[in-house]
Each structure stands twice: as structure tokens, then as C-alpha cells.
Image 1 (cartoon, rainbow, N blue to C red):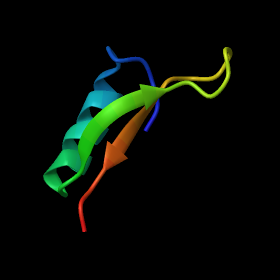
Image 2: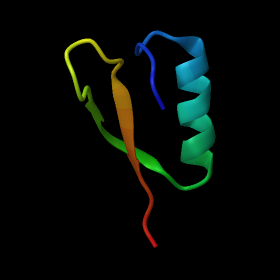
Image 3: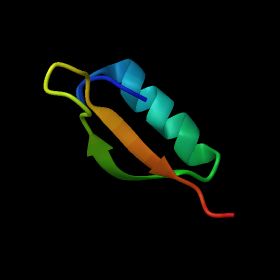
Image 4: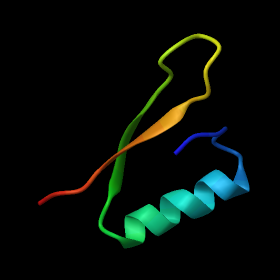
Length: 44
């Protein structure tokens, strides 16, 4: 997922992934001019 933390679409997508068992463990921005991505993890 990507987008600013205040972006409603990003928040909705994060909630959807959390309903599937994923949890947010951090954020990554691979390059200075790239968007910030949420890092999601789901146990096996």
C-alpha cells in the first residue's frame, strides 16, 4: 500500500488488509522522491 498517512483510501486499504490478518509493522520510503509504503505482515 502506498499514500500519505492522511489519505482515506490508504486507511481503507489498510483496514481491509488488517481484516485479512495482516498487521502494519512499519513504513518504508525506498527513495527520497517515492511515496511512503506501509509494511504489512501476516503470520503463517
